[in-house]
Image 1 (tube, one colour):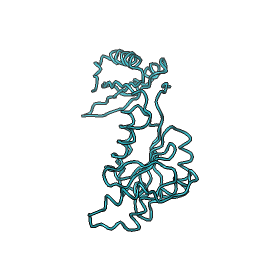
Image 2 (cartoon, rainbow, N blue to C red):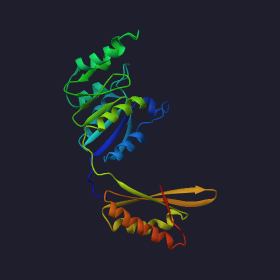
Image 3 (cartoon, one colour):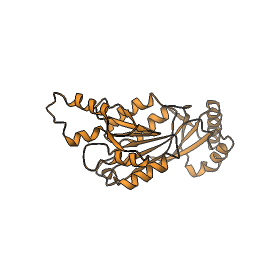
Image 4 (spheres, rainbow, N blue to C red):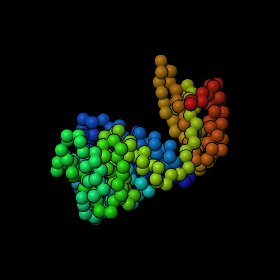
Length: 252
């Protein structure tokens, strides 16, 4: 097991359109990459439907399991955007018209010829006590309540929101990884790689098989929060590969 000196996080995607396949999720992979780069360990990614009770119970449960919960989806102006009210219910607080959020919306729509109607005003309704998350793309903010960060589902907006969030929250040690490729099937590697991993609690080893032009092979990724442990384990992996008469290839 890897010794964890990183904050842990869960990514929660909310939306029937993602579950139906109508909208292809583009947020989970990007969030995972950004969190990894900031020394935050993403331990789970989950997709749930636009159902009020489901969102409430999921937020209550997940917020107790990790340091950070990041959500995307369901904070727009339409009738099925229910994430805000559900998150408020999860923390037993009311949803109120937020004056700062309203000011940002008014400034954004001023002079555009677009009416700031009742539907759009809904995006200024925020759980009581929550902090606003900046939206430099379209003004309507996300929000942070306790350890839950609620963001838009539109990838460009969500990415801009997360960029701002990551500047202001606790990060941890960055994971070091070394990737090694070989033309050996993973079944022939499994036992010894397990032995190498078991020999050092600081490392984890992943195997990713590939098949190219009739050749079977495996990409092996050695990961650790400790650079020296990662290097030692990768040397063991390379030496093991050489026993098959193969020359291991380091992948950048």
